[in-house]
Image 1 (tube, rainbow, N blue to C red):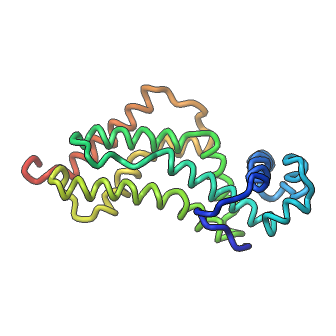
Image 2 (cartoon, helix red, strand yellow; image 1 turned 90 degrees about the vertical axis):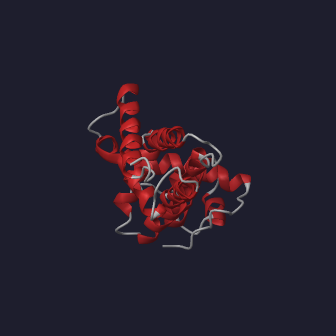
Image 3 (tube, rainbow, N blue to C red; image 1 turned 180 degrees about the vertical axis):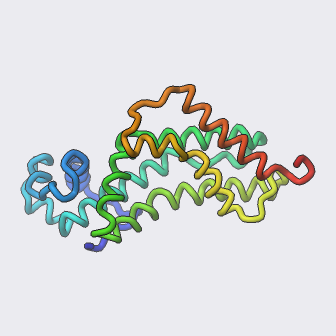
Length: 210
């Protein structure tokens, strides 16, 4: 795969225009069927302009994934380290994370990445580093702080963050990825978040309260 731009790159308005159009083309047609000609037409620019910003189709798609993952990670924000109610913070983080996972565009990108990574391994790395890893690090940081304050009892904050995010994904996310359900009721959504929070707190309650 071509070299992919770093998450901190500042792109020109024209490059962003190409990415916006390419995102629509790739998610509608899939990576294999999409062409640079189609991207150029959708963006309203020449194919030469597309190539001036992106070396090839694989580099263009990787840039789309990187940008989307970075934006989605920013949506989650950083948990409020000064919040006294750990359960409230976890519930807020859990709602934001699950809501992000179930967004149609998030699901579409996830499906394409899973399908194309065997042929383009770097794509999987870009996706993980730009999205899941960033989210994991933010949750890990909050858990470490809460544990240091005695609000949680956690020996391995990284593993605990994995546990919490894993509890949130579960069956609901899998059904959405596979297209077994197209809509999640507010009741089911809230129940999933509440169950993840309560299970996590039971596992990592402070020793004095366990």
